[in-house]
Length: 303
Image (cartoon, rainbow, N blue to C red; front, side):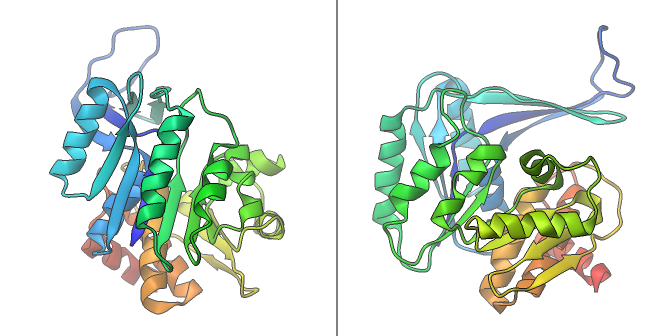
């Protein structure tokens, strides 16, 4: 089973605003409401790839109830623990450029976290996966994921994947996660890199993260593809397919889902990275998460 944990899920309000201008009233030409949160996106992408997955997380208030209903309507196996406050609403403005305005989220207590940990540990078995990704509510600190992993790693043989920013990510490395996936911006933030690092700098930083404890490191690079260093001392780079960017939300989550799916089926790191990159590209080329057929088509263009 592949479990995902989303500390800070959301309702994502997408609006198309042609020629958006600040300081004036802008009219929306198109709008839609979707459930958001990186872990939920990973589970939805895994479900599309016909992998067994179970989503866990925290919700609060009327927005939290809406998140639970939307997740159920998508047929996703899930369990969300009720917290205080309100789950966030994120505004995604699509125009000449993409602009995101993300809310802060619910108030999640240590009692809430402990309840989720108890449930998860009761379900976990050797060989299972746990994907922990995204931000945490503003009342939680940068040790949240590290403390979470410390408590669940008592279950032997569980593969842990972390996708987060800054210290929220780096504090988990001492627990040797199976995979981490910083994007280029996050990598640059961790190591104070120049705005456009070259591939040698990217690999050097990936190896540094590995030396700090990560078993495998993928650096997602948007339209430039992805680089990876593995625990089998391999380094590899995959170029992304060319296409029209429609929506970048969920592309990194699709990469993680695509990697796990292909790695489970082939056990081959390069095949897994290639399929992961195709999954991320396919997601970026459509307004929703990509279908399995779309991913396979994009992968065929990369061969």
